[in-house]
Image (cartoon, rainbow, N blue to C red; front, top):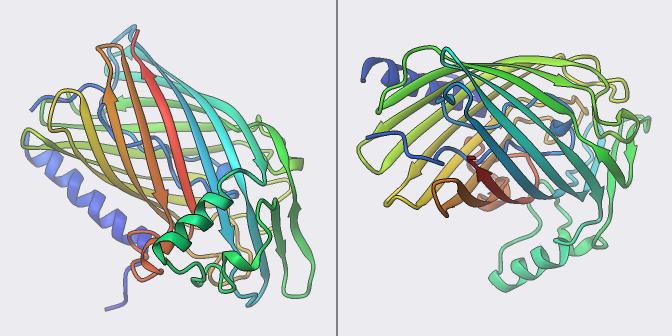
Length: 348
């Protein structure tokens, strides 16, 4: 029997979760759910991404706001087999998301923000961490190792096997792509479970010349599930995909993408939430490099603290396959070398 890909593994896990949700009918914990961060590799940010979330919807007239800062450190310089890929930079992303309950078990979501691609601030911290712990820094995503390269570079480059330039970008700053999403509960949510569907459009508000956007519209669908396993454990799953519009400045971009996410949340009290989640997406760009064209998979460890009935603060840490030297691609694989997220969720 052939081995399953990371996308297939997550798809199977989400389908099992969805079956459990539908067949078994603990209250939904306020401010709970996965960290709203999907693998933010540079090319992934250009296209529609369903951010991880639960399956519950707001009641009519209710609003929720999220402000989130992501620090994304990229280092992907695999052996140049077939093509040469050099991704060595950092992104800072600040996003604002508005959720509005529409009634009839439906909700509107709008997300926008700004992106800044540069040399960043994390290279020295990551190098110190590797030296302190003795962790290797020369995995297959960067065989020469971090110490071989000058720190704080900003390079986003893909060359074909014949040397043709496919992508060559340095710094960039501007708006990111805007997401407009309609969410609807497929069944009346219960204290134990919920199932919903999301329909989304990605609007081309980012600058395609700086590779901060694709220059076209994407549309997609996601099936979301929540299932409470006892009082303190909640499981979440998302499974979907998107049809991608033609990317005006990215030759070799895929016409579609598949996405999946599974998460387990532990909430031992009314204020603290701990979450482990894994998200995966098929490659959105065919570079011709075998490693760079693998599925993007990242593991995220997150914590949320509820300040009061209106405000919660959260933070997370995400890793690619470096965390286990690329031995468990279903847990984490190609993606940013490391990402940190900090956010606030406000319920008026």
